[in-house]
Each structure stands twice: as C-alpha cells, then as structure tokens.
Length: 274
Image (cartoon, rainbow, N blue to C red; front, side, top):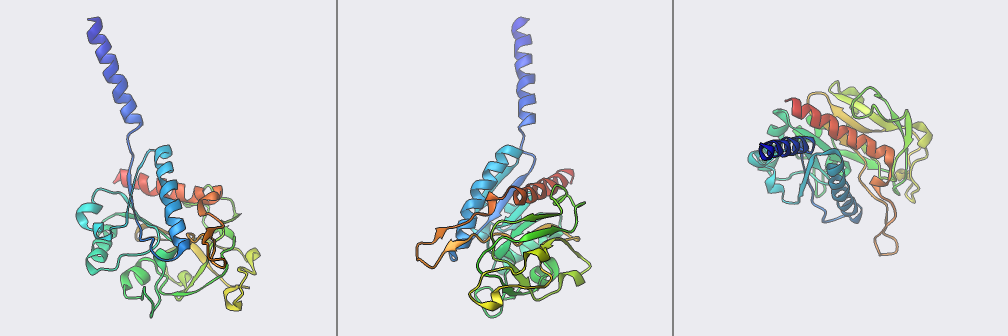
C-alpha cells in the first residue's frame, strides 16, 4: 500500500512539474544574415536573447535561415513568426505567410523586415505586405550613424507598451522613414514614435541623414492582424576601420526589451485562447 501511495505521489508531483514547465506557445524566427554586418550582428544577438527569454518565460523558440520552411505545414506548428532581418521572396513563401496571418497567425518584424525600395535588391514588389499589412509602403530614407533616440509611448494602454514609460532612450539604431503616412491609415495603430527631443537625430556626415524635425513612427500594429513591426534592429558597426567591430547592441536596453517581451506574451496569450 505504501508503494502504491508513493507511486501516486510521484506521479502527481511529476504532472504538476510538467504542467508548470509546459511551453505556453511556440515561436519561429526566420532570418537571412548574409549581407550587412549590422544586420548579421543583430540576428546573432536576437537568436541568443530569444533563446534565453524562452527559458525564462516558458515558451519554445526555434530559428531557421531556410525560407522554404515558410509553408503551411511548417507554420502550423507555431503560434508566432518573427522576421529578424529580411522578408520572403518567392511567391509560394509569400502566399503561405499571407494565409498564415489571415487565419489568425501572429508576427513580429524587425527593422530590415520592412525594407523595400525600387530599384534595389529588395524592390517593392509585394503590395499586400508593404501597403496592406505593414502600411508603410517603400523605404524613403534613414538616419546615419546609428544613434539612440528618445521614443514616445503613444499608446500606454496597449498590451505591448503598457509597462513602458511615457518616454525612454532606445538602443542606438539606424532609423527609417517611409513613403506612406501611417497616421492616415485607419488600420494602423502607432505605438511608439521619435520624440522631438531627439532632434537632431543622426551624426552624418551626409546632411540628409540627420533629421531635424518631422513625424517618425517606429513601432506600430495593424488592427486587422495579430502583429507588431519594430524598427529597431541595426547595431552600430565600425565600418570605417574595416574590422566590423560591434559598437552597440539592441538587447542591452532593458526598457526596449520590455516592449519585445510584452509583445511576445500578448501574442502568445491570445494564441493560447484561440
């Protein structure tokens, strides 16, 4: 009888332990990491950081540079998709991602994942993604060098930004501007933008890469989808001396990290409800 009770106790204890440590949702990150050293640096940093956060917050994190995995069968295993640096290029991959999002999937895109410029290696040849889904249209310009900006929390009630202060200093980043005015799109909800106290933003030497005024959203969501775009994702690199030394890191910023963690938990929680 004692043996039976002991076995029963061990079984209950194991089940409780397993339940407590059960992965609440699964995340898959797609990346390329082949060209710009700043983007490659961010991808390596992101894969390490997300792996650590997965252990801490009890979700599953995988990553792949095989964009052919962007198919219906593979995506069905995951509740959240990340694009760390680029976007899918084939029609098949794009169709699978659009179907995933239109059927309740969740997505977080970083920095270069929103880039499109015609002509370039990444032309604006995907209207649904850049105009409907992101709402930003083409890349228009950027600041240089990567510098920290004071970011303004425009939606403190949103699940992704509810733990952020009214303003905070970001990690150094190359900031993008866009061809479309996001504020004219009723589907787009701007969460963070560059505060006017940041200006002038950038150090040059090209004068058009130093911003002195303007409205620049940097984090937003499309209310028709479960998604968030985050413009951060470009580490500062010592290009000038040819050694590509990393001079800054995105995930060295605790406040900025809170944004990403809360976004994951928000999207993961809603996925669990589904």
